[in-house]
Length: 277
Image 1 (cartoon, rainbow, N blue to C red):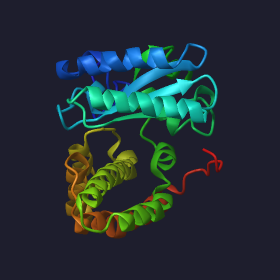
Image 2 (cartoon, helix red, strand yellow):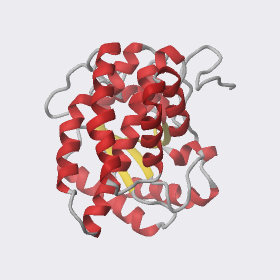
Image 3 (cartoon, one colour):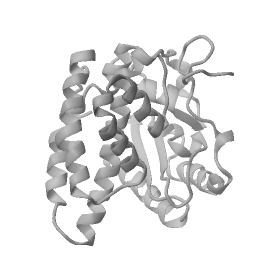
């Protein structure tokens, strides 16, 4: 299938990755993840498992990229499920130096298929996740176009994240290796979310989709050139985390608040979720 701007020939967002695109250096990691998931989560617990991120997109860099997994469970995740997932992620991270961390998201399959999550988690599974085990939930989800509705439901909650980012930034503001490591982790996650939000802000006008952080920043820059340099900084930090507090402040105190306000102006706020979600 040929794609233009991440869309197929009919204008639907094309699926982001595939197992055939996993770089050879990461094949053993993916095999171990598949085996570990199957050994940890019995069929009566696990509906399906997915890869997402740079590894199934074929852009992962050994020693730099992380392993991202999503598990759809047959019931809502329990504390035991989360503990098992955390243990598996830690084992994968420790066992494979080619990844810089592993993360496993857990959701009940009913949540992923729900009407409330149709244009957020449902879209994420259908378009950004690569099936690894089980029956693909994408077969039960619609196809998606780069609309304002999709923009609102994917990233229309940025304003809700800012207080937590500020709290975490304040908690790791001091000197020392531990604080620096915490700032790097925070800068990476904040940078990623800022860039994704910047891309989806302009996605309906651009009429396309990309997961590439550099391209996302450049697409954003076409529509908001006055903020282009700050968004490029966020994209750089998302790929190469920094402990520089000034850079973190730029994203959390300057670009983030502006982006949240502009996002609500353009697309409106995301539909509220229950407190437990």
